[in-house]
Structures are given as structure tokens and as C-alpha cells.
Image: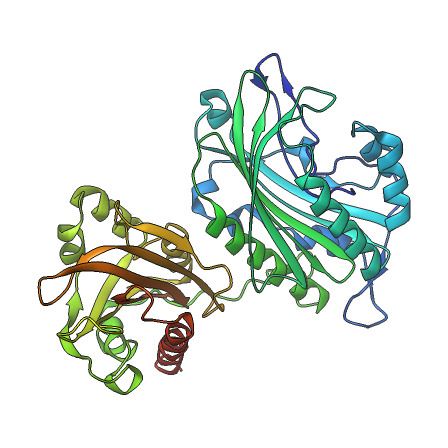
Length: 437
């Protein structure tokens, strides 16, 4: 396995001195280049690699107090040093030569405060690895994916153990992608690793978040991986260069007046929904309205303010008989800008939270907007006629620019197909985009 989801730093004397995944350290060899996957003659240079990883600003404001870890950042050109860090260096060295690894670049940010407290996220890292050609990148990716699945529960040569490993599906990232959540550590301390790795031509790339707490970071890491892939493609198209500010100027923050005009146009209209449903509720929502309905109004208010919530709009449709979709709702929020909308998406804003329901993420659900996630919930519910039955709810969260929308459908279990919900989600995305053109 070549620098693919590879643990290269250790736990010492029961304390984490440094821990990172998907990082390949080393240096000293001459610069290396590789072929561009776009079919052009231009080669991928060291400068290209250094421009591909995500900056601290691109990781999000929650990591603004993290520090660049120089020991796990920069070029990783020395393949011999990389091989020597493995428990089986000769096997690793043979893989490196067989797959044609040329170079790599890592960018890791960590928090000494979190490491000392052994609490919360302590590391976020992005990496790109350059192979001689796409075939070598595919072989390396497949080998790395297979090696990641091995030796669960077995300590390695340094006493480091992968206690558990759960894979999760990813979509619309690179040419191929995979994700996993692992519990890692030694006798004294454990932590949780969430990572997404993907292919882009002769490049293997990955994003990793390390957390002492079992927080679900799958959506966040998938969003960062998609952002890393977009950054890589921009570099390959020569839209990004060193010494220049290639970030497009931010849009002006959305005002309440603008939101008032736009929000009613972003929801599903009667012609978009199944027959038999009628409007049951419709109207604007202020920050106070939303916070007052939460189990913890003070916390809800703090979150809404942190996302710079501007205004919301709700449109609810219903019918008396619980057959097929009998309740359909769309709620749309306007946030001040895209960054805040992305943060709200990562934090799971607008998604249902029913303690007694059974949740199922839908990894094969199509991608919509800039970001999207879909869930299926099942549980007992009381229908419009007062009878109890087993209900099924689909929740689809979609972000388009600085707007965040959730589509919620409720029906008796088994009476709504995923294809029906996909069609409604497509119609919602079309409304959101058309209203902003």
C-alpha cells in the first residue's frame, strides 16, 4: 500500500505525541512530475501538488485555532523513508516501485489543546499522491483499500491497533472513492478516524478527521473530499497558480429583503407533488420562530446565529387518509452566504431527530445541489384518523448556494418508493436553481 490511509505516526508512553492518517512524510529527492489525466501534454509538477491540498480557511471556521503540523505537512518525495516507516518495509518498497509512486504533498492541522484534553477533533488532514500514470494510481488505490480492511483487532509491530472498521459509500467524488470510520489506538488511548479517499487520473487523494469522541463526521469529510477534488481539477485546468488569489470574490451577504422575495419561489408547488395533497401550512419563519420550537431553544438560537440565519420558509402539504404520501413538507433556509450554508449542512441542520425512530442513511441516493444527503426513518406514528401504524419518512437535505432545504415525505411503511422521493428532490433542486438565475 502506498501512502493510502496509512498510519505513520505513533502513540508513545500512553500519550499521543502525534497521530495522523493518510500522511506520507519524507523529503530530499529531486522533484518528480507525472502525466495529466486530462490527456494534455502538461505534466503535474511539484507546484501543482502543493496547490491541490486544502488551505486552513477551506477546512472551515471550526478549525481556525488549529496549527499547521510541519512534521506531517509538505512534500513526501523520499520513497525509501516512506517504506521504512511501515512494519514491512521491503513489501512497501516493492509496492512503491510496482505502482510507480513519484511524489506527494500533505497538509495537516492539529490542536495541541484537544490532544492534551483528549477530547474532540484534534486533527484534520488532506493529501495528494502522484503516480506515474492512472493505471498505477488505480492499482495503488485498490491495494490501499484492501489493506485498510485487514488486521482489524490485531496490534501492529508498534502496538497500534485498528479496533473496528466501518466502510461507508460516497458519491460524486473523483473517478472512484471510498470512505471509512475506524476506532484506532493503543492500550492507553483510543480515537476515531473518518476518511474519504479517491482517484483523479494519476492522483490518489484523501481527507481525514481524527476525533477523540465518537462524533459522526462522515458528511463533513465527504464535503471536504468533494472540495479537495474540485480544487485538484481547478489546478489541472490551470485555474489556480502560486502567488495569486484565485478565490472568486464572495457574494454580498444575503439581506432579509432579498430572502423575502426568493424563499417562496424555492419550495415545491402544487404541480410538483403527488395528486390528492393540499396545502396545510405555509409561511415565513424567523430565527425566534425556529428556536422556540426546539427542545433546547437557547442552543438552537446559538446555532442559528453561528450560521448567520437570515430567514426561513415552510410549505406543508397533507391529506386526510394515510395512504401513499399523506404528508409532504419543504422547509428552506436562507443563510448569509455559502460558507454558512455549508456549515449548517455539515452540522445536520433541518434533519429530523426522533429518538424512537430507526434511521437508515441512503448512500445510493443521487446527489443534488452542491451538497446533499438522504435518510430513511421508520417508526410508529398516529395518522390523521387517530389510528397508529408503522410509518416511513424520507428526509433529503439539499444545499444550493446559500440556501439549505429539506424535503420530508411521510407514508405508511412500504408505500413510497425511493424513486418517487428522488423525483421530488430533483424538482426541488430545479426550483432552487431556477429562482436564483
